Length: 78
Image (tube, rainbow, N blue to C red; front, side, top):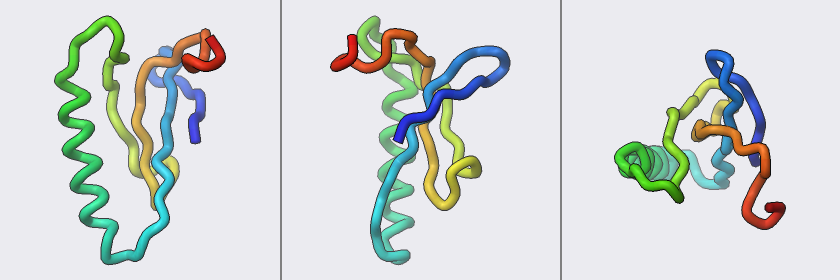
């Protein structure tokens, strides 16, 4: 799911990770998620949005990635 929000006066996109799993698998999913966010944070390319952060409280027990909000929507809508 994707939500629009505001952080420090900047419009942001909140991309909520949806997952269905056993409780025993949650730790592994979180570890993989953290690894991918660390990689995204290091990317600097004109075709890749900057990674602004993540939040695990807004959509608990899930979490979301935070990136800049683009007014033209997604690539299919543009």
